[in-house]
Image 1 (cartoon, rainbow, N blue to C red):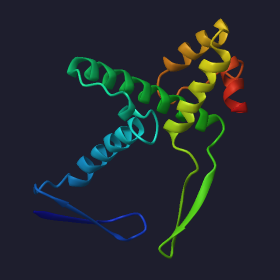
Image 2 (cartoon, rainbow, N blue to C red; image 1 turned 135 degrees about the horizontal axis):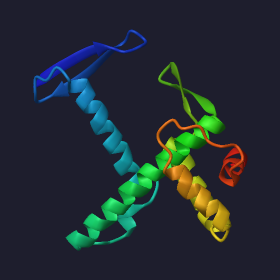
Image 3 (tube, rainbow, N blue to C red; image 1 turned 120 degrees about the vertical axis):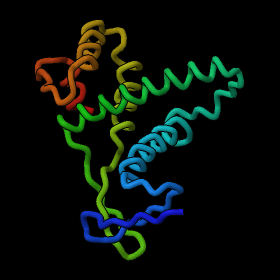
Image 4 (cartoon, one colour; image 1 turned 45 degrees about the horizontal axis):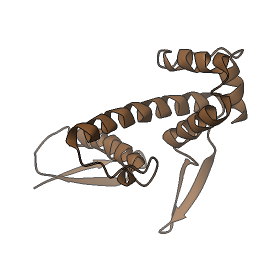
Length: 156
């Protein structure tokens, strides 16, 4: 076992135990942690995958692929909404320490927005076409404020 230690932005020690002496252990762990968050959203924190009761490997594999695509789209839309109308910051006090975090994750904001779009606006072809254009924008693109989807996002 190898112990990796570094200082975080608050000058506190962060410890990571690994089975490899890799100098990039924290970068590897950061990638792993984003995948852990995604699987958490697949299960109890979001789409409730455990209720599917699928046992066929091919069907389960296809379901994971679709869910991964839905996760990415939800995060991308959540990111757009956050850039238009920033997510509120909440203060958490635990164990005698105070930290700040966003009230909702980018996934939850995007996922709830998509649920709202599909239940209330799906019959509107203009909104559907604009949502398609929005999903195909490059990262960090500026959104046209005249889009109906933009108006929906600001009211969300």
